[in-house]
Length: 226
Image (cartoon, rainbow, N blue to C red; front, top):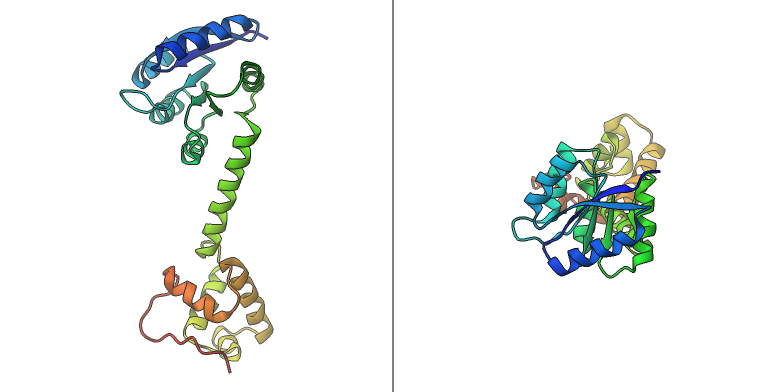
């Protein structure tokens, strides 16, 4: 396998030169083809050199590396970008992956780990440490839970049932209006409570109004069903 052609994009000269010197010890794996001191320069050099991988810092003087990542991925999707930064902010990690970055590494990692992860990129895998992967998965899990709690995954029928629950309708009344059985209403209610992460129909009605799932027109009642 040919060495990865790497472009280093970082505005800190000492770090950039140190990284290039380090990578020169593994010419079997990587070949540095250029260095950029700004995000805009990284974009121009990427177009000219078409590297396999760009090691991209986030904080640079003209614009941040995440914006450059977006532009490069749109214009040159074949180029892999690995964020190499001092920021352990989960927001930056999440945004980088959403933009199509092939990895997110902190500048505190050791040399052997860097080379191991670059080898992962060479094989089409993602360059991310176990700690950052755990953080990313946790953030995704929270986002999904928030989406569920907001009612984004309720079916049309469940929305109809929730609307009637918020109006104070009893299970028989809901069944009659929707032309379904009472048992079916109960099934829908269980699903609604689970998806909204609430314990009872009163909480479900309150959540529905809070999230704008149903409109407040003065007709809603939170009394228990009769």
